[in-house]
Length: 265
Image 1: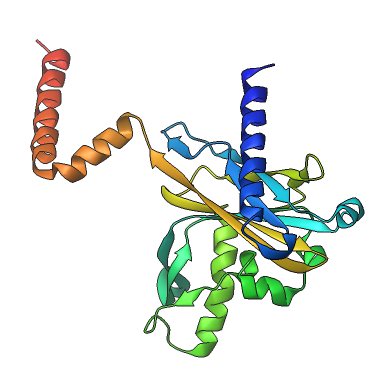
Image 2: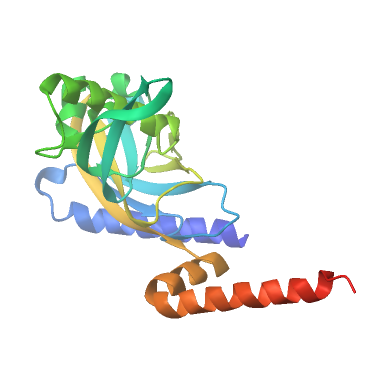
């Protein structure tokens, strides 16, 4: 058995064990869901071009009849750290594009990746997804109290924010990328773009049965910078004065060496 197969089997058994332990705490043998990640840390270097994150999960105390009918659905989401964002409109002013009206938002996920067993409209009603803030169009885009001019502007810019995030590939949805490997085990594939933000990300799995939301499970993922570029960046921030002196010294030495090498006798 390969190392990858062994790791996968270990993770699956661990999920099944956790799922069983969690089910004992719930009355009535109700369904529960547990998830685990293929890795809990992703290091970003200068050569990072994006990657896929695999989420493994286990469904416990499932109804056999509903399983055979395929009426269980899973939606898996990876939310990036909350950030503040400003959406601006550009207008022409004497032939030059300048920033005009803007709206400020707060506590918005910097990234958002979603995978599901089917299209969201086939899983549950829009009302349920709205209550759960589940899906790009259902995220609550909270405006700052004094961050907008009028309610009409707020409505317009609120629609524009997810469109911009989708264009930047920071938000994405992948229906059908949650697959059941057996009657109780499933796997989800989430897409992480090259510009994924660093920080703590939260992965959540939502369990649905016949269009009804049942349970939610969550775990975390850390995305960190690594490599020489990050060490230079950290040094520049932690020792800014020494870094400034070193930069000036390096520029002087480089200029002096260039003069020696390329001077004409």
